[in-house]
Image (cartoon, rainbow, N blue to C red; front, side, top):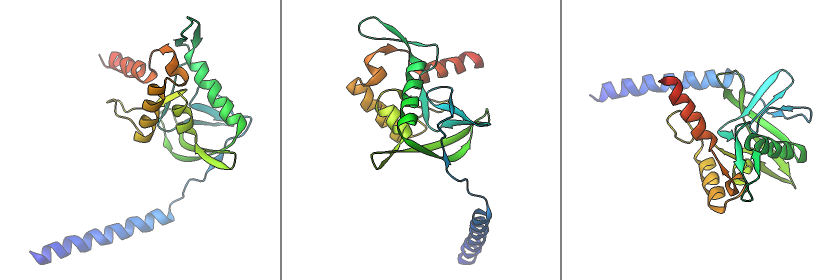
Amino acid sequence: MKQARFAVLATFSMCASAQAQDATNSRVPTPVAVSKSAQLLTGDTWRDGDQLFRLYGVQSCLRGTSAEEPNGNKIDCGNTSLAHLAALFDSAAVSCQPIGYALDKAVFVVCGAQLNGETIDVGTALIATGYAFAATTAKGKAVNENYLVAEINAKMKRTGLWGTTFQHPVQLLLNKRSEIQQ
């Protein structure tokens, strides 16, 4: 029995060592600076040159959906999300770390913005100010739990879009997915 455990452990160690070697030989994606000429498409997606980028774990309001302010004024929820991403990109040097690809070949990124000598996470900034939301899986589980906490805090404080009446974009997308599957 001890020999069998040792054999399994030795095999596991060799496999782990081979995987580690493969990882060190593989190309690590390098951070990308967001250029001031990037074309913003939504509050979480932009095109820079020929490449499409999307903030990982972030869901902006959908363009064409409305939010109603307390005074009854209706605004485009998606354009409001977009405006806040634009303001952040315009006021800070932003660099992003690629972490994967979306189904539409967009590069998923996690981004940091340099503001007043501090680095802030772009996703957290957008969500905590109430202009974006924590993205979820198809089953409704938050992709990033920290983003969910930021969203709950913004909602409790009625910050940003939470001070309006709107359809939550994650719920809209989950409902759309459910309709497609039926």
